[in-house]
Image 1 (cartoon, rainbow, N blue to C red):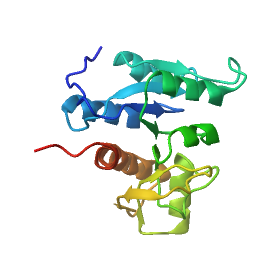
Image 2 (cartoon, rainbow, N blue to C red):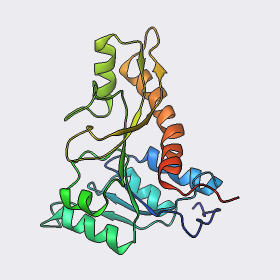
Image 3 (cartoon, rainbow, N blue to C red):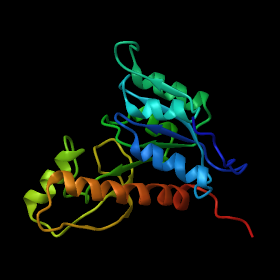
Image 4 (cartoon, helix red, strand yellow):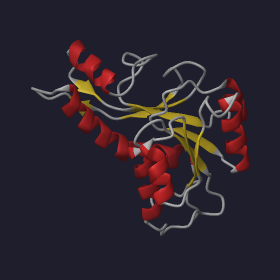
Length: 205
C-alpha cells in the first residue's frame, strides 16, 4: 500500500475522478499530488464498472471509491451527485469515463467538470470515439500529428471548451496500439498540469 506523502494546501480544490477503466490517468493525478506537484488531492473515485482498475487504485491509496451502476441504483446519476456533494468535491475529473455527464452534475459544478480526450478535437471526437477507436481514426485519416486534448465538459460528447492540447507526432509504421502508448504518456504529463493551472490557486509569495 502506498501512503500519501503530500498534504493538500488548505484552499486546494478537492478532486473527484470518474473512470470506467484501468485508471492510469487517475494514477498520474495521485502521483502528481504525492510528489507535491499538484496541490489538489483526489478525494473520491467513482466508476460505473465494479471491476474497474480505477477502484483498485483508489483502494491502494486509501481514497474512497464507489461503484455506481444501474443494477444497484435506480438513478445512478443522482447517486453520483450525492457522492460528489457528500465528499465536498470542488472539481469533477473525467479520466476514461465513457458516459455523458448528467445535466444535474453539470449544473452543480459549472465550469468545474473536465475531461481528457486521447485525440485532437473536434475532428476526432464525438460518440463512440474513445480509446483505441480514436487512434484507429487518426491513422486512417493520414494526419501527421495526434495528441490529447483537455477540455471542459458540457452536455455533448467532447464538445466543451478546450483548455490545452499537446502534439504527438504520428510515426512511420505506427499501429493504433503504438500511437496509443505515446499519446497515453502525453496524457499523464498534461492532465495534472492543466488541472493545477486552471483550477488551483497560484502559489502565494
